[in-house]
Length: 216
Image (cartoon, rainbow, N blue to C red; front, side, top):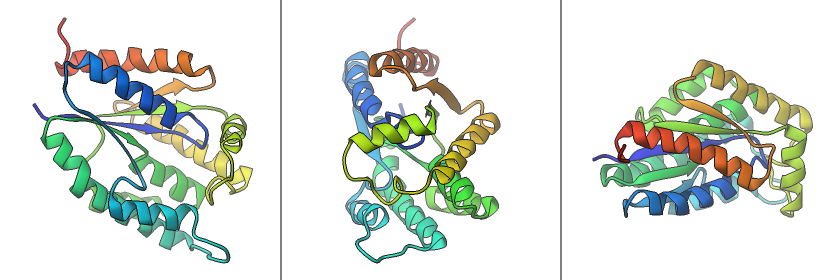
């Protein structure tokens, strides 16, 4: 049986990395040995690691123009889908991914104000049409999320953007959730790690039962 592709999305500091790690351990036990892999965009391949460094920490004086940023994310995604995600899905693995195409729509479309139709075409090209089976949107107030991100240490290039940018990104996720109600499920990420994880587990349990990965 082909695997399933589950994406975690949200603004900075929404808790994606923490929830991904907890979900990976839980699913590894729940699914009777079926492989569960965690990956991220950008940075899910060797090429992606280098692109991630360029995008998030390009170095002093380096200004990445908005369209260049968009194309770099697309290059990372194309490499990631063909070189990692698709092979793992074909092998039956559950692929848990930190960010995917919705991030580009939210950040580069709503945040950077780039053309949404262009982004849609570019996403389709980069992914060869691969969509997530489920996207978990960890929805948290922007100010709360940025406060959490700040506690992690030095902010990257995206985290350093002004509050207006991050609010626009959040608006993007809100609109995407309205448009893609069958694929995107909202989770209130304002609570404790365990509270959020409990809600995520409930949602995923329902989907895995529906997909036939669990017995009745």
